[in-house]
Length: 482
Length: 104
Image 1 (spheres, rainbow over the protein chains, first blue to last red):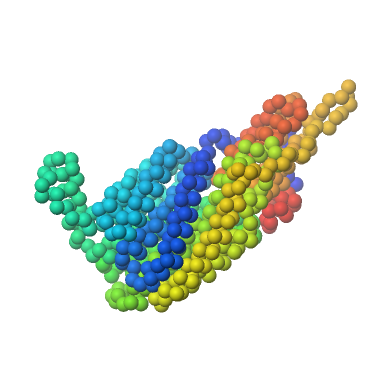
Image 2 (cartoon, rainbow over the protein chains, first blue to last red):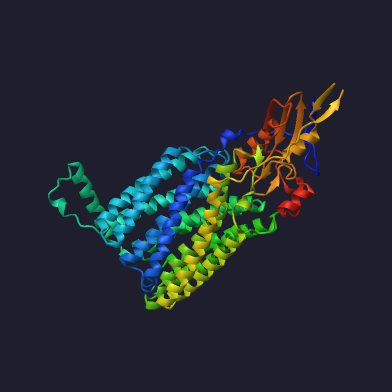
């Protein structure tokens, strides 16, 4: 028997080292169809949302508390962002945290509840039927419950708990609370005439009386404050928490680096949680202390930015690809987002037309800026990976397979990036000045950016039906005469 | 009389056809192959990945095994995945560093 130990041309023997082994079966991503169905649903929802804004630019150019703005916001938040993030979580959490998904079947059920729930909610908001919002919201909530249970059980299997796992666990808590407050708000806007004829001892009566009690409780709070508190739970608690927590793993992986200071990373997550808890309560009750808690969240983001910069400085892959550029743009937008948050949380800030528009900019900046750029960046990695895995994962070592970069066009990535960024800036400025033409022009640019992005996705997806495989070079042992 | 003798060079050459699709470089030049042991018609490979959460985990291990089993006179191939010693870019070959744009 002969044995060789080496590490390429920087060969170092490993004799005597303990071998920490792991079976590939212990770490397995779910079927690629599962995350892809969430992602494609999300992209369709984003196209629909941008289409709505193109048709009705006044939605962003005027104050945001009306039925159509709330419908489009939920189309973006639930249809686009939640769909993609949930699909990505099913894919990424098992691999990034070195475990496997608790149940793929539950995830597929959640997809059905999610699509019916969000589509119904968007329709119900658009016709301002709050009872139907509650009904479809309950369907969505069942899906979210399945998601939280499934990922929660997956987290229980994580062999090495780390900062990313902490962030995912926190995000599950915040999304649950966000959904609950959303249902409470919609319950608060309904009337319960049947409570007078239905005794609370019957199941339906108990439900109606319970909802009426909730409505009475919710009625104590200002409606817009409750809506803003609910929005922050979802956008900061779920979206931003996952972006921060998961990026510690993903940015390190994509740039061949590692977390430089785990304590600093944990502090960023802890401060984000503390700040959000305070922001939620202070927004809800209209307390001037919301400014102080906004500062805590900003301290969390500064800590995060500090650690992210350290990870990037230590990276071994010097060239940043487009997915990382998209992601870093999202992080840069966090600076502007934080500045807007500080202005809007300033105690005693009067509600004028300008501050009303600044609130629109704040929401647009957070959802279609920070979160969308981060998601598009990650999708530039995730979609090629999913398709590659499906088409070529079994062929590796048997046939010559393409690299992931062969699946897409970096020119389209660049064109998508610049169009989307230009559209984003134009819409942002136009919202601030209530300019409908500007909003429409910017949305056209956003749509162009999405078309470039989708062209790339379509090109990647062709590998599912037409894989590009070549035979391997024939290498066989040399013949020796004995 | 003649026979086909498998040696380390042949195994390495075969494994150079197994690429990490994310990095666009083969597992040998990435420095992922820690050791090779040839025993008759059986080959044992000890390898690692660039990061423990590597999404290509399963595909790469199976790919190495597939490549080894594609060799004549190989009936059995075992791939052991280890995390210690942890991979770092200094383990890459010059060709690997060029292909991936890694600087150390």
